[in-house]
Length: 367
Image 1 (cartoon, rainbow, N blue to C red):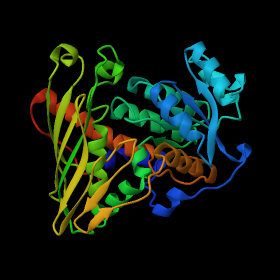
Image 2 (cartoon, one colour; image 1 turned 135 degrees about the vertical axis):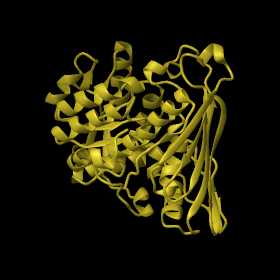
Image 3 (tube, rainbow, N blue to C red; image 1 turned 90 degrees about the horizontal axis):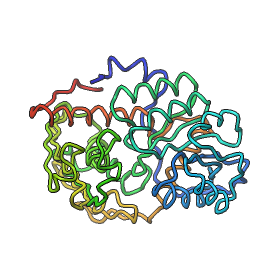
Image 4 (cartoon, rainbow, N blue to C red; image 1 turned 180 degrees about the vertical axis):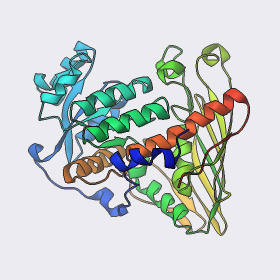
């Protein structure tokens, strides 16, 4: 497991701490022509690109859908027609590297199965393009470091698609926890899951990056880390199967994780591809706060011991991509840099090591 000390040379090259920006910035809207916007190419045209990212890009003020990368010719034709994408901005996976010659594409958004994140991030960086990579960042910390090194070497930015960190309810609980508005947080409980019914989908295939922890599990892990503002020092995890014929030997179906932090705070996380659930609850010395749901596409709701946590709903993907586009355009640090993805993957590696051994895994302090 990399530590801050062993990793500092990489962080110095290509990463930055989370940028704190006012909640009001979420609502900022600037009317810009297409030439003034950052051109983004979506790499992979599955559900998330088709149903969420592409529509969100139509609402963005600082970026636009400039191109696509797909291995399916029929999809290419459909997207060109629907979004007025020039044929010269459409690539397949063999011609992907040729985006280096396309000035209309400033950045790519990698929306592929998790096992392909590292390859297509590194290829984009080598082509001189900024990268937004969907979560989780990679298959392990070693891949994360390779991705960050490639982006640093080619002087391009790397951000991870943690949309919730751009959402105002989430930003509010981050402030409540990290600024200790109710005193130090002592206990966090977070749950995220849904029932996956597709036996042949890559999300049930561990070597492709499937499994509960690699999919929904990143949300509870993020929740514990961004509420506390700390990195865990001890990880214990267990996996159970409701449908062993579908998951056992292939990927984890339901995983429970216990984290201990340097402050003494503890977190209990549950993630599943076998049942649904979505909430984040934090108990502090002088109060409490919670979001339920806390990572839903359809809107977030929250309350605290002081009353409701209430903000207008936003298009999470649109505010995320606009923020990332402004960082690229203005050459500013990314709110969620590659380092944030690595810090999650460091814990995910420990989760799987704990499951395999049946023992807790100690992590060196990261400060």
